[in-house]
Image (cartoon, rainbow over all chains, first blue to last red; front, side, top):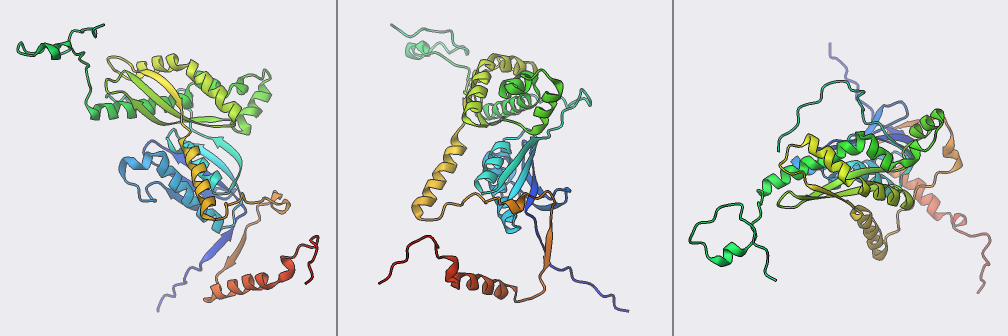
Length: 128
Length: 222
C-alpha cells in the first residue's frame, strides 16, 4: 500500500509582539526571536550572514544579523519586542541598536548572563 | 637638548655607527602577539564589566542607592538603565598602553556618569587584569567612549534622507496592541494565486479618494 505523504502547509504567523534573545559570545552573535512562550519563530546569526572565522565576533557582523532578524520580524507584523541579552561579546550593544534603528519598539531590555555563585571551576587561563 | 641615550635592550655590534647608538631602542613585540594580547585583554575586560561588582556599580550607580531590599530587587529586575560593552582594544606595539573602546547604551546623563566612573577605575581594572593575565608588565588601561556606531547610524539616516527615501518611522504602537493577551492569528496559504489577491486589496484602498482627503482643509474651486 502506498503511504500518503501530507505536504506541510506554508503556515505564516502573525505576531504583534515577541522576545528577541541575543546571545553574544566572543566568536559569534546569535539572534533568536520567540513568542511569549519561548517558541522560536525566526533567527539569524553572524555566521548565517556570510561572515567566517574571527569576523563573526565583530560588532558589525552582529549588526548585520540583527538587521536580518528585523526584516523577518516586520514580515510577521511584529511591532513590540523585549530584548534579552546573554554573553560578554562585542555584539551586545550594536545588535540592540540595529533592532532599534529597524523600527521595532523595545519595551524591555534584560541581561540574563549566567552568574555562578562560585560553582564550577572555570577553564585555565590562556597564555599569551 | 640632546635626546636621552638609553641602554639598548639588545647589545649592538662594535661596528655600529654612533648615530644608531644614540637612538632609543624599544622592545617591540611581534604584531601577531600584539593582536593576541589585545584580544585577550578584550575578553578579560568584558568579563570584568559583566561580573565585577565594583564595575557594575560604576555603570549603574542607582541600583545601590536604595536602602530598601525590596526596592533594590525591583530595580534590578525592572531592567537595566545602561550597559557597557567593549567594542575593541587598541594596544601599542610595546604592549604598554591599551586603549579600550567602550560602547555605552544609555541616555546622555547615564553615559557621562558611567564614563566618568569607569575612567576613575582604570587603575583598578589594570590590577584585576594583571592578576589573570601573566605579562611582564600589565598595560596601562585607558577607557575611551566609542560613538562610531551611533555616528554611522546617523550618517546612514542622513544619506537616506538626501536620496529622497522616506525615513523609516518607528512602528506606531496603537491602543489595540496594548492587550495583554498574545493573540496569534494564523492564516494558511490556500491559494496559489495568493499574490494577486493581496494586490487587489491594496489597489482598492489606493483608488479610494475619500481616505486621502483632509476633511478640515478648505476645498479650492476653479
